[in-house]
Image (cartoon, rainbow, N blue to C red; front, side, top):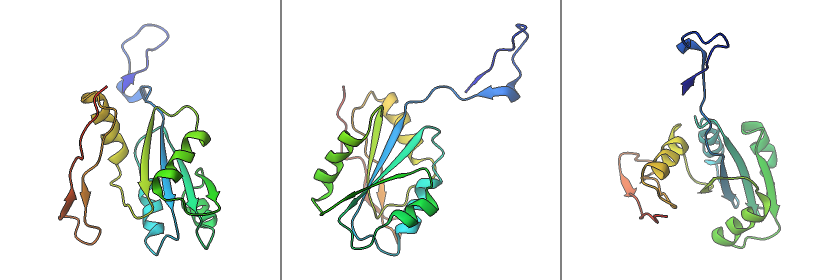
Length: 157
C-alpha cells in the first residue's frame, strides 16, 4: 500500500494508507448438488482478504436451488443457474459470456475450502512469475497436512 499524499505536501501519515490498485478477480464457483460442505466452501470465499474479488456461482442443474444459501453467506455474489449439468469445463466456459472486466478468473469447484489469503497469493504469484495460469496447492479436506497436488504447471506469457 502507498500512503496518501497530504494536500499541503507534508510528509504522508502512514496511518492514512490507501490500498494500491489491484486487478479485479472473479471467482467462478461451479456447483452441482453440493453437499453439507457447501456452507464451509462459501464461508472460505467470504473470508478472502483480496480487495477486488467478485463471485459468480454457476449452478449446474442442481436439484435444489443454492441461491438462498449463497445469498446468506455471500450477499454480493451472483448466481447463474444452468438447466442441466454440462460438466465443469463447459459450465466455466459460460462464465466468459457472463463476466466483463476480470483481469483474472479463479475457477473453483463446490468442494473447496480456501485459506483466507489464497486469492491474494495466487494473484501475487501470477505477477511474480509472469504466469498466465496458476494452480494452488491442494490438500486433503479431512487431513489438511496431506498434500494431494502441488502446482500443475505454468503457462508463461
